[in-house]
Image (tube, rainbow, N blue to C red; front, top):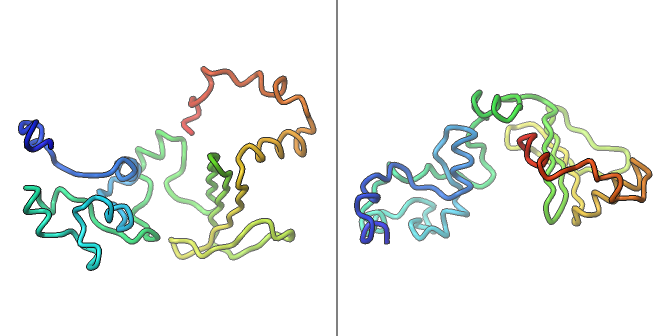
Length: 175
């Protein structure tokens, strides 16, 4: 569509990527995608897990414009110094922690040493970097908030306890 309707913009295309691939690029500097998502781009020879030369020719693009293909579990790179500084994170390190709250609430902790917790509440997995990661997941992120309020803060007045969180604060910590 862009080639036929906006040929001047089509000529400017240096790299083709999905939105999540752009985020990976900004974090790592690596132009990449995983074969799972690439399967839906209609440019992949799915059976051979490689870009389709026929589709590249039909679309009038080049392999250089397409991201390097990785398996979904493969490490594509490390956080760049610029991205780490912007996000207030370290580039690499043991014990790194990521918390994701969405439809579920998940915590990931990477570690060089294998470990499990005494209550079996965390799962231990082999990590993509050759070490291990601990993961705990709650299928309802709202339950995470309930756990925090009821168990940790021991406060049932959710509204009062969270009044200090104002709209202008959201997103200011780069999360």
